[in-house]
Image (cartoon, rainbow, N blue to C red; front, side, top):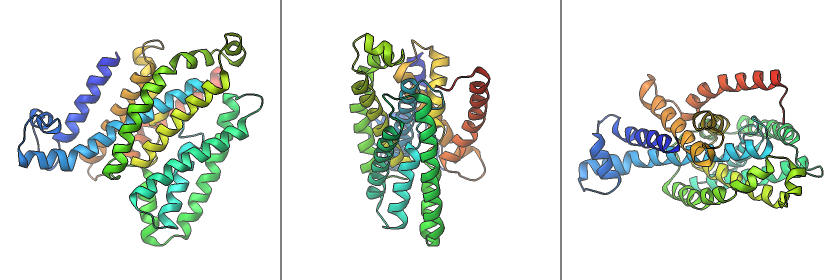
Length: 323
């Protein structure tokens, strides 16, 4: 099933570059994007105009999917998504501060978002630590920190000049294609390094899912493994947020969807990543070409994710699961 998900993601990746004010056939898109043939008129449309956005959607979705799955498995809570435990809010607060107060460039905004994700995660981890980490406590503290960050964001935006406030709000909604080539290349390099690292950490992750006491009994280095997994997840969400802003709900829903499609044993990290890419690519297609007025990608993912969150909260409450 992972191969099938990869094929769907590739089809959407190509389709994103086909449609627009000027239609480009699929074969021309493939030959141009992969430098199999040079045709200046097609290359300008595909490589210069559409490939950066399509690549950003593919990479951001993959990073969000992997990050969300790691959080949920590590903390044993379906609500343990970077969207809700303060990581994305911390990245957003630092980025908005850079936009409004310092008038930062695109690169500085991205660096600020990554720094915010790391700092906020460190604070949440320290506050949640009580002789170990409980998923339920981590989520509750993360939600509180998230609300605190959102309050600061609201204050900063309210005090900003109109142009800066508009720029900040546009960034906060989240959309692919707003970052420069440097940020996109950095995310792609991060994926090349961190996804293999996450795959190598799958075995410690499975042990940690059994609980700290069992993991200690099996000889696992619990805190080192947990910190390594959290670090991979945080850096992925930080780079993804730096490229596209805080695109909501993708990290929350990608992992569960992948597990339903591919199964708990067959889904894994790669399946969650491809589901994340499918969601972001599909949402961007809808936002740009289906609705009458072009919308940010985050608006569409919010429309998709909000009903799922309501269903998840009802299910968790009914089953008595909290972590």
